[in-house]
Length: 242
Image 1 (cartoon, one colour):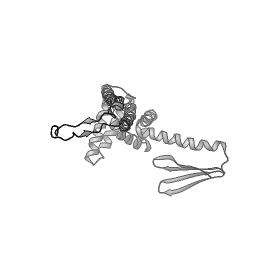
Image 2 (image 1 turned 90 degrees about the horizontal axis):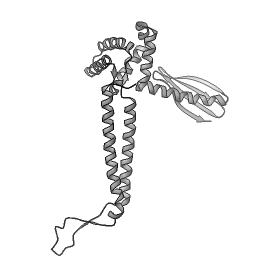
Image 3 (image 1 turned 90 degrees about the vertical axis):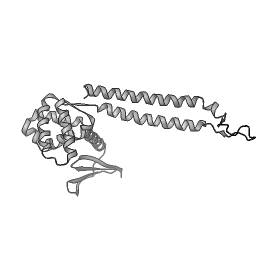
Image 4 (image 1 turned 120 degrees about the vertical axis):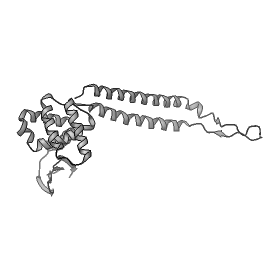
């Protein structure tokens, strides 16, 4: 969810970056367009030795393959920058629903009282200000997700603010980057499990890998799937053909 003057400023900054990339690529294309001529015409260096019976040194012009390589690097850089731009644009701002502003402000205040590291206090102090303003910038996405995860997992949010506030907090958590990553993991797990709809299951086994970490193995005549379950959720470790 995006909005507000801060979001507009970030969009304008992103637009300027795209314009800068366009200028760089235009410059490279210009060099590439003249490469055929330039590659056949050596460029003389400063003729410091002219008049002394010596031939002036000649500098080699850029060759067409070199310019192509340069263009490829610039295109790659532009593509990576575009991916970062799209990612940032999708995460410009999280809007705090009005019913959550007061509960979240109270939870941040309680959380601040337990923090000891100065950098953590600064970070969550910024989060407190952002909640008061109603918008969470991308750099505060992680501390917001951390706060929501703790209060939701402990049942504190439901106990203090009721089921409706809990549901709104859960939706806000799923809009954060950690929440989206969790959803992607679940999609991968569901895709792996969907393979078993069309083949028989020979065995299923839940094993303890370590404290709080388990593996779920599903095996059939033609395939084997291993899932990991721990405090971070459930994820696919591997899908193998038997």
